[in-house]
Amino acid sequence: MKSPNRSVDGATCSQPAGTVVPVIDRNRCEGKAACVAVCPTRVFVIGVLPQDSRGGLSLRGRLKGFAHGWKQALIAAPDACEACGRCVTACPEKAITLARRDAGSP
Ligand code: SF4
Image 1: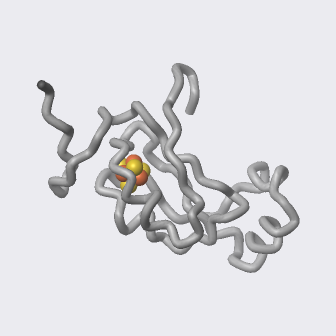
Image 2: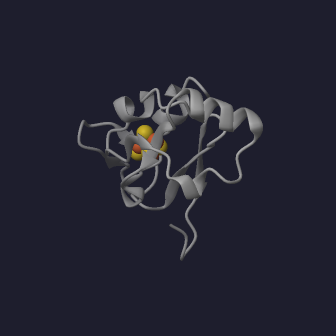
Image 3: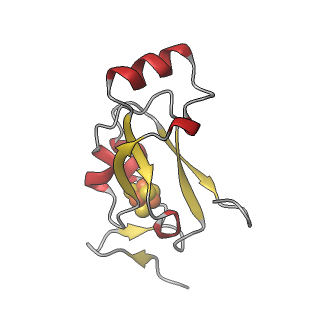
């Protein structure tokens, strides 16, 4: 039986890198960086949400974004996610889910 992957800090992860990707709910993220702190494979960075990613936000999401200077978690290394789930658990806004990465998706 194949043993689970081990990340840089020795955490046990459940999927080969790139099988799933974190999905960030832009209406919830407040850029608090809990995901950056816990991700063992450095998938996230905190940055300014690009203008072209703000269009579909709810009124609440736009107000939140404005209030936080549009600082949000951005996915810098989508191929590095090993599905450990730490970011999902750590996010205080419950803004992160994991989704299977289909061929051709980012
Ligand atoms: S599940 Fe979250 S914390 Fe774990 S490797 Fe993927 S992005 Fe990083």
